[in-house]
Length: 269
Image (cartoon, rainbow, N blue to C red):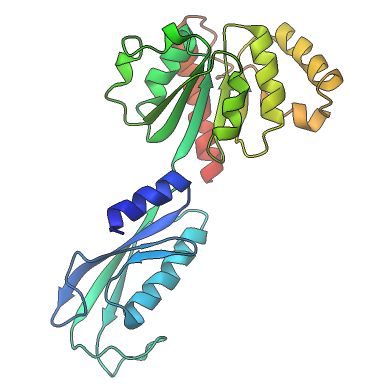
């Protein structure tokens, strides 16, 4: 497997990794500058020449994966028999440096309801490097013409038309997906809230709506859904920044997107 395919595999699996590249070479070395190795938690793909250099790079890459705030770093190696190595002698005679670049897990967001606010929110989030899932029961809101503003998206956009049970999409979403519930139908919102609380692999859960709507939902989730208070409190409502009070769809979308990006930063702290 090529290193590009390995990086794509880690991204698809939503697993962290490190791209290891031979950055510079002086004299003789097992591989030329540019050779690459991809390191995951338990697997590796490619090679930077084997021996002590590769073994040390893999060990350090996995330490980087485990770090709370991974940063790129360079490691220098001297390839001669006078250097004490942890994994045997490499006496090619040259020196080299290896660059370790963390491959962070790409975040995922699911917008349930691609109406006026949902579409504006999708336009904003599409400029972020993430997996963006757009879910709606109404096929006319998911046409290529209506979603044309997303054609140059940085995000990888996934469109889900679910005419009957949009909550079924929850089980298919990647681990850690942040779910934003904002459909046109309060009954649909309520069903999604109930299903989201039963979906253990989600990240944050947000619900658009008024305080009065949430009072009804809380009671229903407790009495009919059987959810306890701690579970119900996983749902954040209202969503968005409290000090942005405009009701225009684009204003609400900016507020919700800013709040979500703040959640992302909190996760990484």
